[in-house]
Amino acid sequence: MSNWSNLSHHFSSAAADFNDPDFRPGIDLTLNQLLETRVKPVINWLAADSMVKTQRVGGFRSRFKGRGMDFDEVRMYQIGDDIRNIDWKVTARTGHAHTKLFKEEREKPVFVVLDQMPSMFFGTAQVFKSLLACQIAGQLMWNSLNNGDRFGALLFSENNHFEMKPSGNRRHCMRLLNRIVENHQQTLENYFSSEKKQSTAEQITQQQNNFSETLRRLQYLAKPGSVIHIISDFNQFDSRCEKQLSKLSQHADLHCVFVNDTIESQLPPAGIYGISNGVENSILDTSKENIRLNYALAFENKLDKLKSFTISHRGIFTSINTQYEQNRSSKINQSINSTEVNL
Image 1 (tube, rainbow, N blue to C red):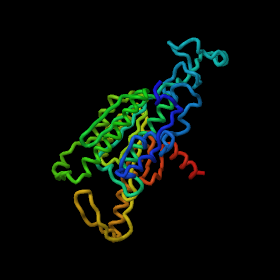
Image 2: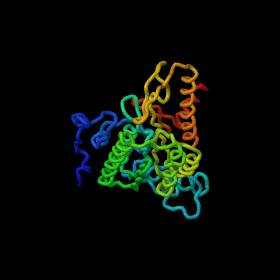
Image 3: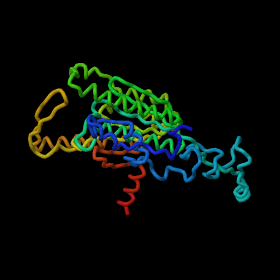
Image 4: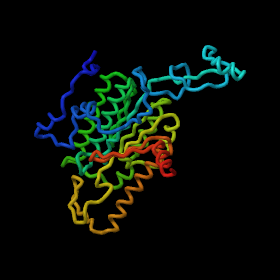
């Protein structure tokens, strides 16, 4: 048994990273930070009513009906049904053969799609969006392994794409955490160093949609009944992504995690600010009220679009900012709210 298979194993604290004089808190990502998410979660990600109340392997109730342990319903006997499941009391009462159906408990493959595009490497509060997204991915991995489920991931950035098929092997998952840290730090070095050359407008226009390509690839990896967590700022979310997600939602459960920064939803107080992308410097004037209103409205429209799309496809939508403020919405929450209004 490896150290990572031992549930009593004590991980190093991420606080040790602050002793490094070159460490930049909230920007740099280390393995310790991802290991710490096992005991210090950053997001509430799973509805309580979707978990079974047993400790058996396979922590989710399957949509498939079969010879499980949890009774589901009684229906008319059909040719091919197991005669051992005939409900003789209902059969005697109705005069027609009825059979019992049970819900199976199955191991559910869990996927995380992690956005590591340059737009994620931004933040004005506690951490960069990219660092927060990596912490969420780490927490989801530990939760999946603790529930006895296989965990897989797809990481995509401007120049890299990495896939890990669902696995319950903790050594494989540790390699994934190392790859997340490596990609994060590599992107920081590539796009925020003084030697980085600017991309021309033409090159940006010709850039392919890595988000859409990753979702297209996911269709071949995610089997029916999978759970898919998408962690992104959804800056590349377009009609192609909508099409891919619509297909995935037909046989998988979606959870979209919208990672954003506080300044993306509302401009800072009126004034003139110096801004930089690491290469160029400019001035931002936030004194005009119409600019402030349009800026906030654009963010609200993006948020509403993502939320409506996810909920309409029977998924769960979570918004979390770089101050770790979280808001979650689902079809169930909407129906509860509407019931309260009617009452």
